[in-house]
Image 1 (spheres, rainbow, N blue to C red):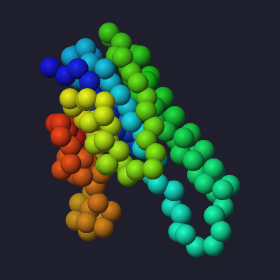
Image 2 (cartoon, rainbow, N blue to C red; image 1 turned 180 degrees about the vertical axis):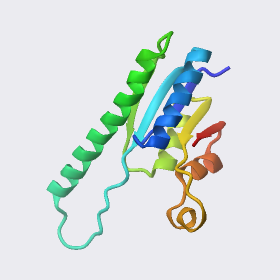
Image 3 (cartoon, rainbow, N blue to C red; image 1 turned 120 degrees about the vertical axis):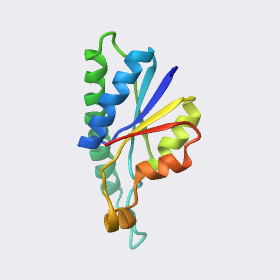
Image 4 (cartoon, one colour; image 1 turned 60 degrees about the vertical axis):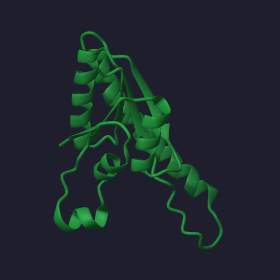
Length: 146
C-alpha cells in the first residue's frame, strides 16, 4: 500500500514514537523511509552587524542534532527484519511544517508520519503545533503519533 514514507523527526521522545511506528509500517509494506530533520531558520534579528560565527555555530549545532536524530532512526531501520531502506534528509531555511509538506511533495511520499507533543490549551495556541500544520497543509495522508 505505501511505497515511500516520510518521517518528520526532531529527536524528541514524541519523534521517537513516530519513528518506531514509521519503521514498522515501512517494514510491513516494503516501503522506503525518508527521515527529515528541519533546521529552524536562524533567529537573526537584523539589529547591528551580522555575526557569521554565530550563524556558523548555530548551523553546526543544528546539523549535529539532526545527525543524532537520523542515527536513531537509522538504527531502528537496521534492526528491522527485513531491513528498511532508509534515507536521511536535512531541511534548511524553512519552518518545520512547511519543510515536511514540501519534502512530501518533492519526494512523492504517500504517507507522512510525525510525532505530537500533546500540547493542549494555551500552550498549543501560543506555541502552535507542527503536527497540526502538517495535517492541514499536506496533500498526502498524515499519521500523527503521540
